[in-house]
Image (cartoon, rainbow, N blue to C red; front, side):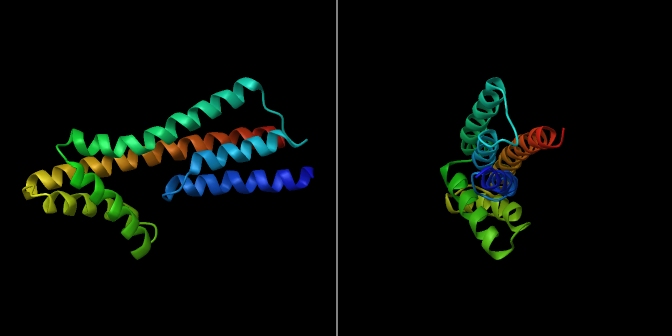
Length: 158
């Protein structure tokens, strides 16, 4: 049973790191991996560690939904830009996996603003805000998932 928990935990941690870049719940998956390893005999984490990573996961997961919207609005965007950014992200993921999510987010936000009647200059500014928010959210998720992965590696190999 311990071997199954070890393998599942490591797979969740690696899947969570991949999910930090892709539009999927990376940090919750990484935290699930941390918990799986905690319940195995291979690693034991303190209550403070589990609470800290758990609260950080919750906070970053919630912020990940609000930061792109905040970025769009901060740079003068509207609901059209926010919807366009999400649609562009998904389209970019399907059309050109990897780089497509970046270009799709920017172009989708710009297209959304243009559909909403914004002039080109305002649409570009809002698209930049959506893109900046998206990249910020992704960076936070990557850092948290890497922190959990490093924490587990230290526990497993020391």
